[in-house]
Image 1 (cartoon, rainbow, N blue to C red):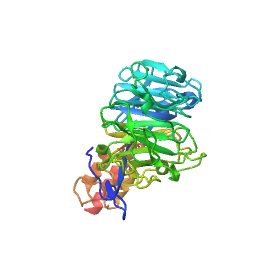
Image 2 (image 1 turned 30 degrees about the vertical axis):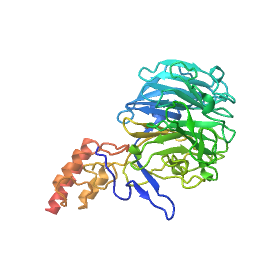
Image 3 (image 1 turned 90 degrees about the horizontal axis):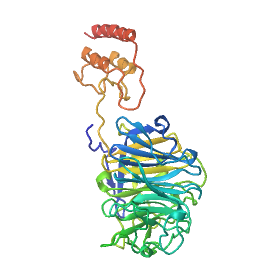
Image 4 (image 1 turned 180 degrees about the vertical axis):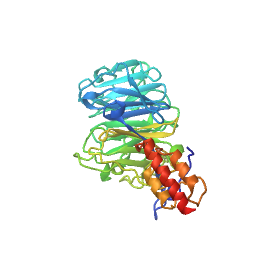
Amino acid sequence: MTRSLLTRSAAVALVVASAIPSIAQVTLQLRSTLDAFTLGTGNPGSVAAYGDSLFVGSLFSAGTITRIDNPLTSPVNAGTLSGTLVLGGNGYVSLDTDGTTLVAASNNSGVNDLVQVFDFATGSLRYEANPGGLPGPGPGPSLSRIDGAAIDPITGNVWLTGFGGGLPTVLSADTLTSASDNPSTLFAGSPTGTGFRDIDFDSETGDLYLRATNGVLGGQRLEGSVDDFTTLNSLGATAGFSQIAGGDFATLQDSNRSALNIEFLPASFTGTEAVFITNTRVSAPTLASFDSQVLAFDADAGFDGETPFSLDPAGVPVSLTFLNSDGVTPFTTAGSTDGIYDFSFDPVNEVLYIADHSNGAIYAFSRPFEVEPLVGDYNGDGAVNAADYTVWRDGGPLQNETVSPGVVDAEDYAAWADNYGATSSAISVAVPEPNALALFALAAAVGVARRC
């Protein structure tokens, strides 16, 4: 499939607002949808992808980690990772991988909370520990409940975030021992008093993004240091981080809820600017649209020490548009009632995976691409079926015409018959019985004779 920018209606563009800085518009297109239940992963709560492997962590009583091979082409369940257990509580709430290591965090209401580190290639368990067995992150309380996990792209260390006053903890991926030389300079505590929900890094610079209750915080990695970070600006500045989204911005008010996640997307993927995406959750389960719960913010601004990450302290988000696989219509779902989404960017295939817990689905999005014409799909609905024959029989006009353009003739019929049953998406099309095709052929002969 040829990847390129779409027409103006779907192209990535910059939107310039009057008297304020420009803000990027990021457009992504659906590449495929995975049904978690058909694949046997359980209801997805967390995902981690790299190359031809996708790991899915399920929530609640079915808490397991499943490996899916070839998720973009021919997805197949490659089995449950050894060492994972069917857990109670909230199950696996966070996964991350760098193609060498897979880290998993399970949150089970303080009972059997675990961090587990696996070998990516074999899926074998290296180490695991509960909060009581983890080293403290420095001054202040240690993790009370694990909620987020990420792998530092600069050092390979594992970072964990937790509920309550728990500070981020930095661990060696090989031993789960403390990996920070001076953890007291990392952070001085959560600005909201409820801890950090999730964490991710700029894959090139190692700058970090922390999802806290009712906001997002950022830290710029200090030059010459592997662990220490500085404040970015004066917006809610505290030692080690600054609030970069949240505050008065109502859609990031999460009412101290869990399952809040964050993911960094490089400019090479978005086509405009680096962004971070995060989900927001309403105070009670109500029907809400996908695009109202998955938000994007500019990740490049703010590093000059003067400019905030967003247009104002309220955290105005970047315009983020999701399109269906046709590259034209907006992507929508039947409706997620609880806003539980998780994200994973695969740098190998340049694909963003989004796990939708409420709908039991995992969506794969990529940069906008051109949709190859589907031969015989004369009405443009993504499937070659009887409806296309009707369009041909009635004399057109024919969409996706590949032979004798502009003329409706027997060659067009042959192209339709040769491709009957083909689809350009996950549409299920029944193939007619041979006698039905014979009837179509008879009708075709009559139709051609009538037009000659």
